Image (cartoon, rainbow, N blue to C red; front, side, top):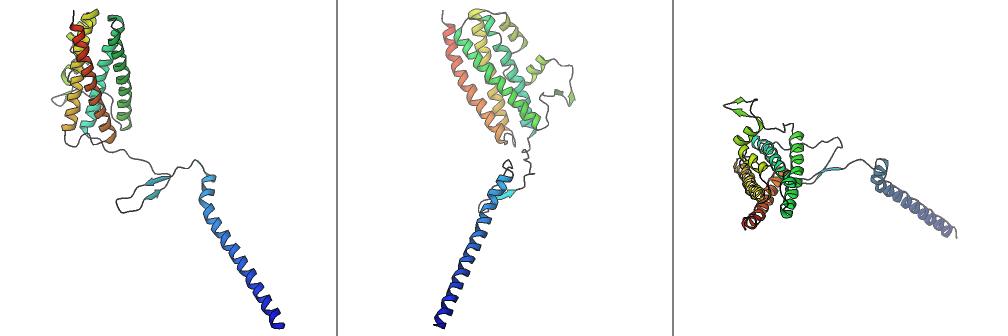
Amino acid sequence: MKFFGFSATKRSAIRVTTRRGGLFAAGILILFVSLPVWAQQADPNAPVIVQPGAPGQATRTLPTSTRATLPPASPKDVEFMQGMIMHHAQAVEMTALIGSHTTNKDLSLLGARISHSQSEEIRFMRRWLEARGESTEMPMKMGGMNMPGMSDMSKHEMLMPGMLTKAQMDALRNARGKEFDRLFLTGTIQHHGGALTMVKDLFDTAGAGQDAVLFNFATDVDSGQRAEIRIMQGMLEAVAQP
């Protein structure tokens, strides 16, 4: 009986100890599992910055003080954006004449679309340049010298493919009705063709167009203006009919 009592007590002690040990281990496990949750609750707004690893390597969690760096822009990238701002600005100027120069509803709809899209793109290009500390205006140089006295229109005529000359803009402003429609469509087809030339020149330049954001933008400009050229060619055929 003494042995049985001792054995039962021992077994009971063992069971209690095991039970306490299990509870202790469970408590430790809960504590570790709860730590990330507690950390998130302590600062729910803290960002988590994860850097993907190279192929075959693990990702890394970076400190919250990490700041993104923009990829270096080539001089041609900057020149393209500066030039396209100038290019788009004339297209917006052309579309502003539609309301007072024609009653063609199809042309009005097209003009509104061009004005809205190119105004938005001008704002995007300005932000892109400003984020990189670049001027939003294209510097004028001739023979290595800045030419501050050069007028805006002469800058356009020298630098920007497809842009309307002063004489073409004057003719557009003076036209009305079907004549305005014809001049607007032929001028805008010419203008869009110049933008396609600028995109091609960008991608033909070694090292240019590698910035992913700029690449997507330039590609969108190319596809969008090709589509609008096709629309305007169809509209021009209708305007030419008596």
